[in-house]
Length: 630
Image 1 (cartoon, helix red, strand yellow):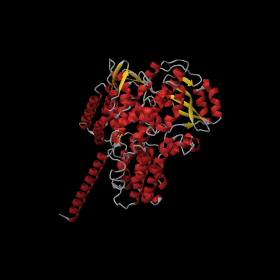
Image 2: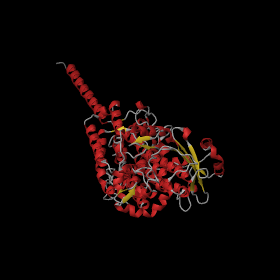
Image 3: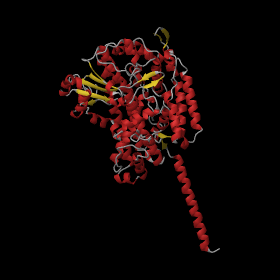
């Protein structure tokens, strides 16, 4: 055979081998690629993508089942006896007298079976996904009342959720009269409203108070037209603040187990004492989807019981904001697509993966499990289906960019100044802001040191194709759909992105501290996840105590909320940020002497110090997870 023919055969064979290699490589890359739910086909074009990894979702469902066993002792500690509606039973019986545990287990087992026997691409198809989300939304209706469908007789009975496990109930009894008084004394309700948010809202990321500016006045006048003369002097003295939670007026109440679950749309006006820095609510606009039924309450124009109702409605809006927007949207929803595109565009050997992989292990799987096990593990809010939650996220995300979630950016936008909330030490009148800023500073320092050691010039940033692709795909409407990410042309821009991403995961870690749950959140009159009656009374109406208590969560709803809370605090993290054997263990970078490992150690030490200051009574330093697990 002539040489040129042999050469052609060899070249052809090599070409085939190269082509086969490229095809296989592309196929493997596509198989490993993290995909996301097709939200755009549902009209949800504003919110970031919701990623899905089949194996991670199955693992999350199984682990959640195990966690249900971990917090069993906390539930068994609900053994204090109560007499409600003429029946004397344990707190556990009133909260969980149905086969709740067995039903939850059946739901998890069925979902694991369904996921394990369905290929990921098939599961993500519109038809199968819709059926799965619909299944997650369904709630069996009951035809007869059970113990866990009982409304409380007395405000003090909201201590029903204080478990004896770990001494929570015994250590909390000194607060019982104070907490209960918000349902009997309108002045106590006003007095406690702001301190409850400012001191106990860290896990809910309640950074939402805004200083009223002139640009806000037309909208405020529209809502409070009939009482503006009462409010105007407070505005003129520049002491008027607001919490705008009217977003919830876009959704009707849900019907779950034959009861309403309703989140009012609320707009709360507060007056600040310029000397003491104390904030007091002075007016509340309460609205539902039918705006004709909206009511405006002030301390002066309302009966005592109507004012108590108004603040009850406001506290419900605050709680639901904290659960779904402050916590889940800010920390879960925005972080997950950034992790998805990181996995897709950046190789595991890249320094960015070394930095971020340890904090990206659980979130995508948990978020998918939450959507698919909604009725089993979701908190009992009016957003009673995954579809409703996605609609809320999409609404909140409209015209919102990535950095608006960062504490310093939020403070500037809200017009909040440290001097306005400081008496003895910085932010002592809004302590959760001081905590959020502390975690931010730790995250920013860690990110800054990583970038300074990894990239020395803007050219290195520009030449890093994996980094550039990560940012490009994160911002792409068809991929991450995360808005407001900067052009990656400088170390400073990368520091901003990494600081924000690290901070979201780090800040979420406080949710697993005992001090974040506390007796304050467990006493659900302080933080109601829903109202169970969607009728808005008139300000002049007198509401008897029975009706007031029937607005608030019944015993079964309280039980569902405790199931949600206990998963956070009464189970161990899969991977603690601070390793059990010390801050020097399980380092992210191969060389123990790598300066980036020194930055990691410093970051861990700063979180440890934060925990010890945040909860000096029970500083559980290994309870702070490295990733967002729940």
